[in-house]
Amino acid sequence: MTESVSEPTPEEGPRSKNQKAGFLTQIFSRVTAPSQESYILSRRIFLRGLGLVYLTAFLSLWIQWEGLLGSDGILPVQSFLERADSQLGDARFWQVPTLFWIRADDAFIGLVLMGGMVFSVLAVIGVMPVFSFAFLWISYLSLCSVGQSFLSFQWDILLLEIGFMAVFFSPFCIFLDSRKNSAPSRLLLWVYRWLLFRLMFVSGLVKLMSGDPLWKSLTALQYHYETQPLPTRWAWYSHQLPDEFQKFSVVLMFAIEIVVPFLIFLTRRLRIVAAFSFIGLMLVIGISGNYCFFNILTVLLCFALLDDDLLRRWIPLKFRNRFRFQPGLVRSPQLRLVWNTLLGGILILMGWLVLFNQVTGGKMPRSIMPILQICSPFRLVNGYGLFAVMTPTRPEIRVEGSFDGVEWKAYEFKWKPGALDQAPRWVQPHQPRLDWQMWFAALGDFRSPQNRWFLRFAEKLLQGAPSVTGLLHHNPFPDRPPVYIRAVVEDYHFTTVESRRATGNWWEREVARSYMPAVSLTSRQ
Image (tube, rainbow, N blue to C red):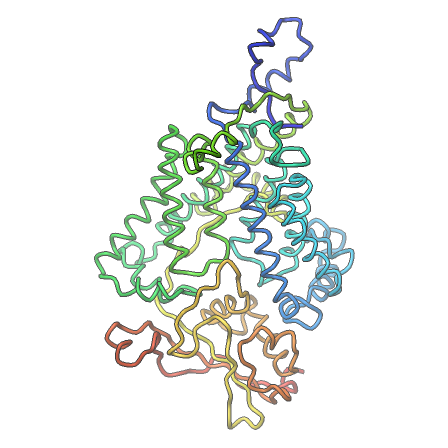
């Protein structure tokens, strides 16, 4: 079973007017026919890479979900669904699409995560790709729907958008490597290209539209490396580069994000230029900052621009003939052709609507908004754009506990900056979601709705919940929990080259100020 219909082989001869194929079949065949270039090898690499990303995502959640979403975690799934049930009524199944309406206990959450890891492995080895990616999308959507603050990042929705299309982009077969599989539908290939265009173009556009003076003055990178959520060791070195080089880097970034995306719609050579420009940018971003699997997903999208002839050049000569394909020799079922055409057209149209809404600053006509709102819970088509406004400072929250309110001991996190002599570490593609949320919490107020999880975090520390303290690097109260919890905030900066040589420190910090006053279990009641 395959996805496209090709022109007849020489042995078949020209089609006659009396051929059984109907008019609609011929139309759909032309729309979804493969392009001149073959993308079978490209699809194999893309789908296996996507399987690895899914595996990374599920493994990353597996080692931290109990403290984040478990029954004794910071934001329990069961409590969230109970609130959704009382507020949404019968609309809850559409507004919160998740398998956890069946059961929301810890055992079932663990089962879904385990199933996700199993089907990720199947996707990587290329077994039943359609069914594997369908299960992966449903499972990850279920987690994101109930993950609240901890699963609301742009790479989560990007994974869902890419993963949904992968169900239909995959060949309908048992084994991905079967030589009977034809090339991907041209329309579905363009859906991925269109997503890549929106992702890159809007990422640059939102920076200009925000009116942020740091982006306008080309000085944003003089702050970015030290103020991003979880920098790597290389961010420190990048921060030391001359100001003029930082400005040049901003100009180059804008060129790649705003100008280069239009090359996607031009010739094959220019598409290849665009692909390697995006890949280069993603490598630089990935080296200097821990952005989970966002950079990997973007690189995978670039394979929609790289045909098999180009990719074969990277394969040793003695194996190259194994990857020479003659796609499109098997006919796809008419129903699949119809579905792929309708789905691809709808997704491209919805992408246009989302892009128009972002470009016009939310001036979408009210009559059209319901179309996007209906599909919004399923994250089928999304808006993107990181760091529209650059953060010029780096406040860091230090959480402390005490038995008497006089002597305070600090909790240590695994990944976010703490000790001044601790070098920034590499953690991607794993995402320590508590550490990430601490960065966002420091930019706001602990009483704000988006930071309501912070008080729950403090409450769990006061209770000594093992699942929550297990998310930390060091718990200074291993025997019994403290009576009081408070939080202070300090401004962190990278040291200079001279300062690091003299002190050995990677960070320096300014005097602490209160973030959250001392609270106890009594004060929380």
